Amino acid sequence: MTTPTSAGELLRLVRTGAATTRKALLARSGLSRTTLTARLEQLQEAGLLTEGGQEDSTGGRPARRLRFDDGHAVVLVASIDTTHAEAALTDLSGRRLAHREGELRVADGPEPVLDRIAAWFEAMLAEAGRPVCGVGVSVPGPVEPGTARVTQPPIMPGWDGYPIDARLGPRFGAPVLVDNDANLMALGEHRARYPDETALVVVKVSTGIGAGLVIGGEVYRGVDGGAGDIGHVRLPGHPDARCLCGSAGCLAAVAGGGALAARLTELGLPTTSGSGVRKRILAGEPAAVRLAEAAGRQVGEVLATLVCVVNPGVVVLAGDLAEPHFGAGVREELYRRALPRATRNLRVEIGGRGEALGGAVAMVVETVFAPAEVDRRLAGRP
Image 1 (tube, rainbow, N blue to C red):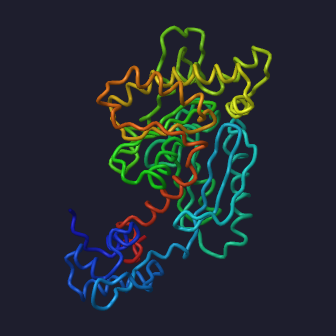
Image 2: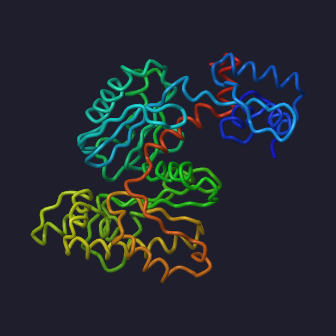
Image 3: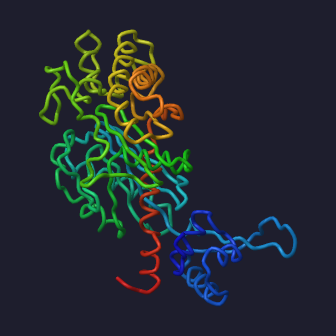
């Protein structure tokens, strides 16, 4: 175990619940009582830490609890999908204080989309009365790690290399963090529902298809942000399925919501997107149900390889097609194709529309209040 010595490390222990009393921090840190007190005072003076209440006592004087002050600032987050977006203002624990959503076409380009998001942010902030510590944005395309720029996104025309942080940062005076929606769904699911899982996979199936991986408590992004991009694994036998990436036979072009919408339209059931497919499935339209089950089997075929490689404890199905018929198809093919050892402790769950907003909050808070960042601010370094 790394011995925490800085104020930032102490705040991390309190924020994560690993140690919430002075006695517990002394035991975990190895610091002297004098040094610990001085560093806790730094955090309290900066408005990051409060102390009060009492823990249950097993004898002697009850210990007062230390708590990360999750109300001293707010987080702005947005989730942008192909035809819809939503935004929220939350406290630092992720509790929603305000929310907006509406139809918004990512294909219209970055400036009109981000300006609409910014207008939502400004409307929500008008009643907040607290400073913004950070902005988190979820996008339906690959993001180069360490940047706020989408890189070569198949379904986001005009966004390649666009500086999202430069568009939003000056308006809100806060750092802007951007990540792929499947990554943030995975992070949000892990933090909210599966914090003890060492390996978790979220598969988002909406108009397109992607996967997010959390391994060892952290999002695994790969060398350049391409980890989990299963939507562009090519399936044999589909030479006519043209993908937006320019290839043929990609999983997204065969089993994504956009592909299913096109097939339903050909069958005389006009449908324009993954959300439209979902509506037809929930209405019990037989053709939509059959297509969802078949698409689930095709996703399960690809997912079997990922499960054998990563060996996760949980696979969460998210997005517009995350419903029982699609899930049944995934389970059928996944368990048939994957090794029994890889699936004997595996759960496949339906996660609905996903936790991208929650993941965006976690991304911002865990970055802004990382120990090194807290220590830098306390020292007054730029």
